Image (cartoon, rainbow, N blue to C red; front, side, top):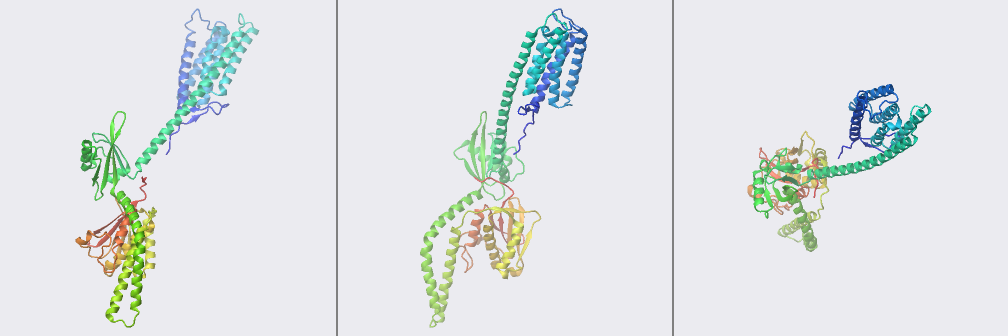
Length: 542
């Protein structure tokens, strides 16, 4: 989750640890430049408006004149460079401070030395140097300004330019420069630490916000945030997918009138906070409502969950219960069943049996084998573990599956025809469970789908609910009275079947949040459709 981090610059070449954000640095530089421009204009105006108490240019009027005009001209040039950013920040800031020291020292000399009061203006530049550049550079500025002040006094005293030398005042002024530079360094350091702390907190808030958005958008359950006027403020991807809409609508009624009316009913009777809806197609959706009190406004959260989630949890519960049941009765049934089967086999080896008795022993063996197969199927179903779902390339998987199926069942060679779409199909399913479901569907198609009338079609294609695999045979269809019991356990129309194949297949599908259904095609051919979850739609399962 990317975060826009402000660029940090380090203006002092002697202190690489002191840095500030680019935006803040340029803003401070522009503020100091405005002060510098006002100061340069004021000094230049003193040439034309002379005030008696002021000693501007009293020692050397020509030097004061040319220095003040040069100071103003240099200030204008630096202003152009600052606002157009012709040069780098560090260079411009250093030019401002050093030019202040040099020009103000000349103006102080032309006005009579430290007693003129011009030297105090350099103190402002020292404070600015500590804030704009900071680090050891602030001490360099203070040392430079102190040497300039002392050198001016020494030069004037040697040449008898001033009435008296003011070394004490010059020394105190230099000491004040160092004090101001140190204080500005401390202030800048604290400001930097506060900015770093604020920046870290901002990053933390941004990360938490993006993480919350990611979790909400990738939840398996649909989340809709609305208000009492049914205006939608937020809806995640799962909610849009369950509602079968591409973009987030403005109001609940645009998703479903039933959802809107159910929400109004819940506002009137808050005890009824759950309802079953049918938003898109045949998919049943369970909706839950809850209140989200905010600081100034009350919002409401609507949670939408596909009924397939509940079917998956129910299937796990059923498997757990069935496992406990079969573990307790398997031993009790298999032992007598084995004795019956063995006794029937021994009887069939008796040469004195009549034809009628041989037929009865064959019935015993056949039904014993059938009961044993039922027990095996139930035990396999009860031992089913949680699905190890993974991202599966269905086109490649189906091609490999058919090759292996022909090896296991040589009689089925060329019985099936595979049809794959042009778009890539990625299913999220346990490959072992998918093989069991396909084995059952393909074996049923070979047994009941009249393969002699034509090839059995295995078709894979993408739908709005995810990738789907269809097994289409040549059967005339299932009668309406049998259709209701199609996926019930022990239901079969075959004398040799156990009636558990489709029940187990549907249970495996629900265990992988897939859906196994039956319908007739437009050509009146029987079609079993297995719709899988799209592996490219990443969700967080709670």
